[in-house]
Image 1 (cartoon, rainbow, N blue to C red):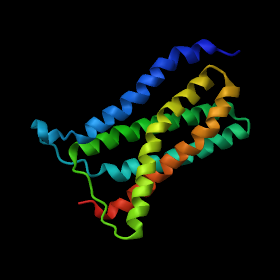
Image 2 (cartoon, one colour):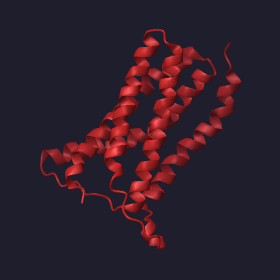
Image 3 (cartoon, one colour):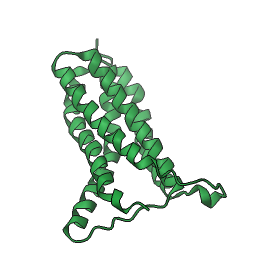
Amino acid sequence: MEDHSLEKKYSKFIVAVSIIIPVVVAILFGVKLKDFGINVEPLSFLPPIYATINGITAIVLIWAVLAIKNGKRKLHEQLMTSAIALSVAFLVMYVAYHMTADSTKFGGEGVIRYVYFFILITHILLSIAIIPLVLITYVRALAQRFDRHRKIAKITFPLWLYVAVTGVVVYLMISPYYA
C-alpha cells in the first residue's frame, strides 16, 4: 500500500531539519566553550573516531545496497537505519571536537593543497545537500513508496558514499597537521 500522506506529513520536518542542521553546525563550529568560561580540554581524541565512523558508514551503505539487490529488504532497512545513526554520531562528535579545539590548518603545499581543498569543499557542500536526500529517501521507504524511493536512492547513495569516503580522506590528509 502506498502512503502519500506520510511523505506529506514529514515534508515540513525534512525542510526544517535540512536547514537547521547546517545552520546550527555552522554556528557551533564558531563557538568555543572556553569563550563562555567553560574550561574543557580539547577533545583531540575524537577526529580519528569520527573519521572511522565515516569509513564504517561507507561500508554499511555498500552492504545495504548489496542487501537490497539480493532481496534482503529487512537487512537493507536495518543497515540504512544504522547508516543514519552513524551519521548522527559523527555529527555530534564533529561538533563537540570543534567546540573544544581550534581548527587545524592544512599544511600541504603545491598541487596537494588544491586537491585537499577541492575534496574538502565538495565534501562540505555535499554533506549539506545529502541531509534532505537521506531524509526523503528514508521517508519514501517508510511510506512504502518504493518506486519513488528507488528513484531518489540512485542519487542519494553515491552522494552519501562520496561524503562518507571523503570524510576519511580529509581526515587522513589533515591528520599530520593536528597539534
